Amino acid sequence: MPEYYDLTTNRPTDVMEDSNTHQYVDVSTQIPLTIYYDANSTDTFDNKGRIINNAIIYNSGQYSIDESKVISNTDSLKIKDEAIKKKMAQ
Image (cartoon, rainbow, N blue to C red; front, side):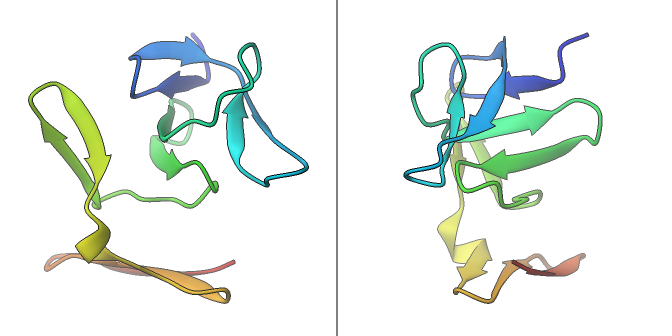
């Protein structure tokens, strides 16, 4: 079973961090991933590698990030959800 899935294309992908942009990209295309899923941890990430569980919107076959639920600065990332509160230090 593949480890990562690109939720934009809904296909398995290999992921690496671009050392220049510090964004996570598809290894074969070098294109930044918007949202990708780790099948082993069951976490979902943005292209900066931040866990964005509970901040994802699925609408008309497309995934996007609900930015109103994500508060980010250089020190931390918070995701607002009525049932779950998460805070990550970067």
